[in-house]
Length: 128
Image (cartoon, rainbow, N blue to C red):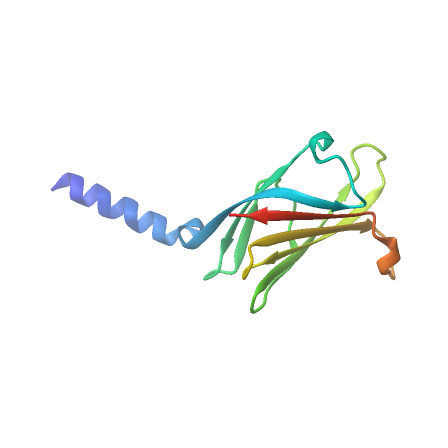
């Protein structure tokens, strides 16, 4: 009987916690613009968990997620960081497409009035 109570308590805990309702995705880099040697990149994969019920996400890299939006077939957000090599401030817009499980990141300089021509790097990941 004690085992049943412990099991029910654990089950209840997982359903109350946010990750109980999340989908986990493993995303492997497939393409970059401009073209880069994918083997030379410091990272080649990204782990993402998406909680559709509570409208939350967790990204393995631990960036502070801002402006999170859940739309019909896409989850989008951005994060700010400084380039570890140059030290320049950057902003990356992230898009996870639910219908084909693609994750796309577009990195720009952190400035006002961005244009498409300001794109520093576009990375495309295929997820499963």
